[in-house]
Image 1 (cartoon, rainbow, N blue to C red):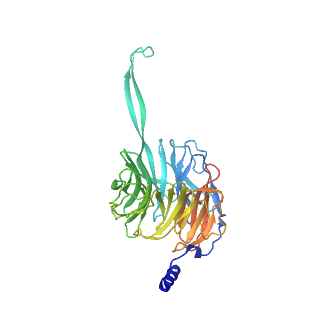
Image 2: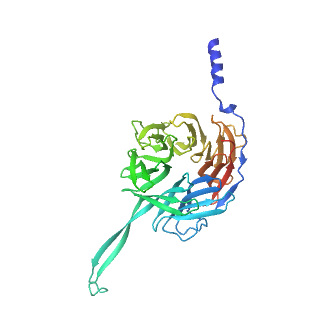
Image 3: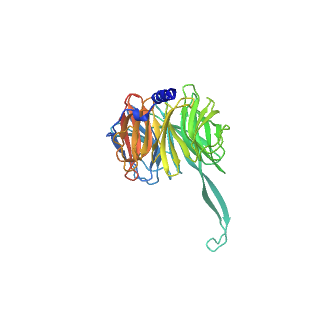
Length: 415
């Protein structure tokens, strides 16, 4: 009996306790700048550098935005724009064609040029030849009618942009069915793209590669009818790390929840070599973002309960620490930090009691202890977070004001 009592004391001392972590006070992030976008315009991703933040997204037809100049190219346009640290527009560029275009992600290379991922609508012209003898055409003139048939987003675009905002070239890849390009990573001789491919029974994940010369090939398909990819990273050894969600069996791993968050490791050739499922019974799980430190951000929904999921993994997809926090949105991650719309108390935060869902920034140490917490005042939805080592974080959020976006800069606290 005495032995069991002593053992219990030892185990209690060995297990880390969240309550034992030092209390942290939430302070408001004050360095926020409004982004001049119009109703129905969207920002999808950001990239942070020493001289400012680069944004990509989609502009609606007839938008009143002042971020990018010039008339619209089509129904919707992709765009890329760079904003200085004091909120001034450095440059902006429309991307696309006379039809519907979107921009979804971007990455910068060692030459400080940008590769912007997106998609374009595919349209074919149907010609009908009609001969009529009605009174308005007494000479039986042959009338040629041209109709445009919209086939959906079949074209994946990768726009190459200079560091001063000039279009250097465009890589295009045509799909047989509608496609949603999600994210991209650089390889030694091209770009690896993670997409969702629509099929008759649903959607599957697709990994493809485009060379810098413009040729594109499929590498791997993931799932059967209910799989979606969200982010991809290139590891230092040339292999890849990707995340998303799936209700399909993948590499003999089976569904455990309603939908599982999935982590995929790929070889340097894009072949899937392992799958790790994050799941809870009767729960919808998804991983939405992955930082280059393998800090993952996601979402979990079970009944009326919704939580932001934040987990630190190793490159081999082994979990190191994890937490789930009541939230109205997914968590998004960069570096060692995360943003999400918190809707309740957070352990160790001494003064955080939001009455409605509010965006908060958290910075963690290597063991998952919160080091710093900032309230993003007026923000209701996290959009993107990007990180520059030694400088800090650029945070993009949607505001309480309809269609309003802001960029907030948070200085680095050491990681």
